[in-house]
Image 1 (tube, rainbow, N blue to C red):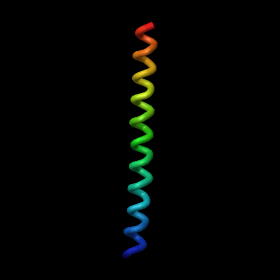
Image 2 (cartoon, helix red, strand yellow):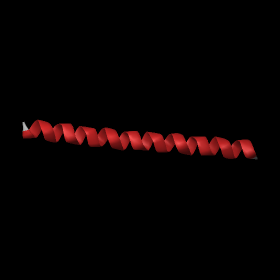
Image 3 (cartoon, rainbow, N blue to C red):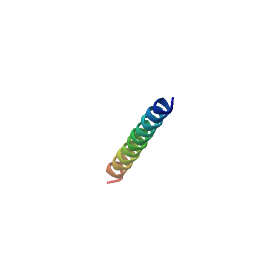
Length: 39
């Protein structure tokens, strides 16, 4: 049971990291488009 909990924990951490990276990429892309629109 403890092994299963550990696996679930690491999977959720990996998903969280991927999710944060995805959000960061989206924000950077939006900023880039906004800067392009200004000039």
